[in-house]
Length: 291
Image 1 (cartoon, rainbow, N blue to C red):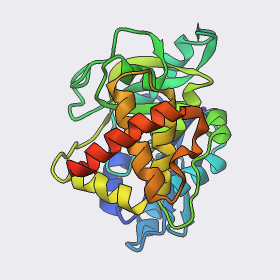
Image 2: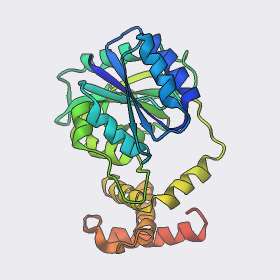
Image 3: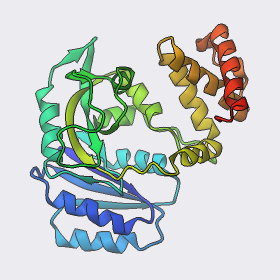
């Protein structure tokens, strides 16, 4: 098998059934479903055992103590024994041709290079309408790109990512004592340094995008995981080209350096002038109640 479809889950056994049904409908069967149960207490294991016994989809199930999605992701990568790896969240499902489309896009990009970087996976759309070819915010018209490069070119939608498993092993999520969340782009930015992705302008993952409560949810994640957000903002401030977006990252870097107890000028690679500008903008964000 070439692809591991990885699903981290926590007390979402009812939603998992939708993902399972979509995997049964796949036109390409060159995958296995790896479920990492992050400490569920809703008898998720009984549901999964029933599906394993049906024998319609190759399934592996692993239970671990609750530690958050990023620890579950690291566990999933360590257990994977396939060339390629993608994450399917427990509340999402795949289009019927998703595996076929992703593998075809990856194979068609074999040997392609961009700025000296090889293709290390595929980026496709995630959206609400499985019948649409493109998502609500179309990709730039490029065949390959880094993930962050797509957003810098104006893309603002949701994505589905399939990576070579070896890359995810090279860049595991940091496991920070007392915290359970790390912004996913923190790791994807690091992978961007060594490879690009084949761009597949098609929805392959279907999800329900909920806007209500999103802002407060992000604020809660920031309050509870200050060290992880510090790492993310410091990195983004460093890699983002000069401009207002970089200033925003610098401002939040300063805020989270303070909140995590780090000296503001500890990140020498940012430069003193950049950090001073970040101090000014960070102060504005606090006064404007945007943090």
